[in-house]
Image (tube, rainbow, N blue to C red; front, side, top):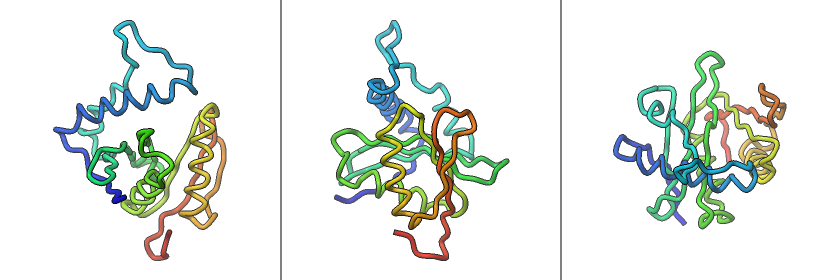
Amino acid sequence: MVVELEKVKGDGRIALQHLFELGAYDLSELSGSDINECGRFITNPAIIDWFDDPNYSPFFIRANGRIAGFVVIKYIVEEDIHYLNHFFVLRKYRNQHIGKQAASMAFDRFEGYWRVSQFDWNLPAQKFWRKVLASYTNGTYTETRRKDNKGPMQEFKADWSTPVK
């Protein structure tokens, strides 16, 4: 399967918003979130800001040309670190190494320091990221608690001068 990251442009905002809501639905079995009175999951109102703020980089994950998910990277200027702000792969494309490939492609796009975090209640995400980061960094990432103490976070350096998997 050919996996690609495609920068989301203005005409992709609606699709990204729909994917974000699918992600919220998908996580609801773990997070306990409910729909609102309009029958929708509350989506992130900052999606529009992702296109106006140069510190956000939203991408579609494509598998064989089809949208398979999305990734949003935020550059935190004050800390000089890239933060994997959102990452979602549609269920159809899971367990095919698409998420791992997309994550590696995201890390490879931006050299420097990185942070990935999960909530305590999202055990599948914790397992996924520990496995992906162990492979990508050859086990050189560090893990601590998120600053809001709501789960683990991992940090590492994407260094283009050394080969990565």
